[in-house]
Image (cartoon, rainbow, N blue to C red; front, side, top):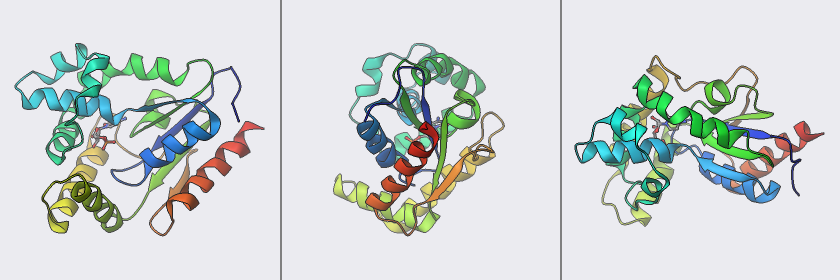
Length: 207
Ligand code: C5P
């Protein structure tokens, strides 16, 4: 089922490992719209800082190829991403690309932290996907273990909480639900239930 050719933006915000990525990919498939995982932009910048490149310089010079580096999903890169994400110049260097993607013809779903509040405040649908820190840490532990990373629950929970604190506490574009966002708490939902809830929200706003 396709959306209209006019811009139609689905903004999916929320904390780490709440299920934003899974829901956003499913929405993109269901409604046949493009999807941008905006966390990848910050991860790509964070990754470069681990090699000694300045964060602002890295953000200003970012190319599509940088998003295809295969080690962007590590805990170290996630922490580096949330450190560079507090820098206003980094955020503004990444703004235009996200903004243009959000308003592209045919519709788009973007997931991140500030899509409904800053990147596209006029988004037609705004979802805030969340879950308890314990549940999120458990899911992230499973993902990391499956990907062959040696870690444990306490460490993953500490990482999730540190990232939440930094993302919610920063001055520029802090993570928070937009006033008109619909919250989906996935703590007690299966993936199918969470996706169904999100699809229902989009359908409600399409008519
Ligand atoms: O979503 P993901 O876990 O890949 O994001 C990595 C980090 O990038 C987040 O912890 C956050 O600090 C930052 N980020 C952001 N704004 C976005 C997307 C991600 O600040 N729109």
